[in-house]
Image 1 (cartoon, rainbow, N blue to C red):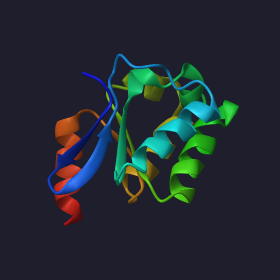
Image 2 (image 1 turned 135 degrees about the vertical axis):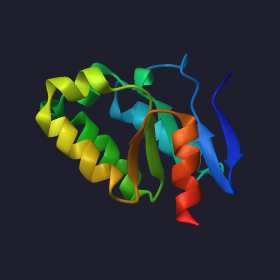
Image 3 (image 1 turned 135 degrees about the horizontal axis):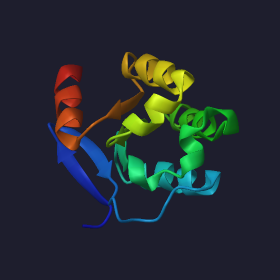
Length: 122
């Protein structure tokens, strides 16, 4: 599979391939935001594509990436198991909890969970 635009429950989602390149720089993140301009409302990024620094909040990398998505009005869904990162950081647990309670950035275990979240929007 390669990165592709998919319609999921009436919403255009840019689904990133888990085997694709890692997001290690702000430019990598901006490239994903740019890909959303193909018509996507949501970019679904597998957690394994995010550099480890994303999950270490002290680096501020996650905050910068999340802010870019908010600024460009594109939703970001981080898809996959991030439990080892959550176990290591109470700050990350709080961020994930707060994000999942809002409307713009989500941390979800699977694309099926993303589908459920999309259905709840309508």
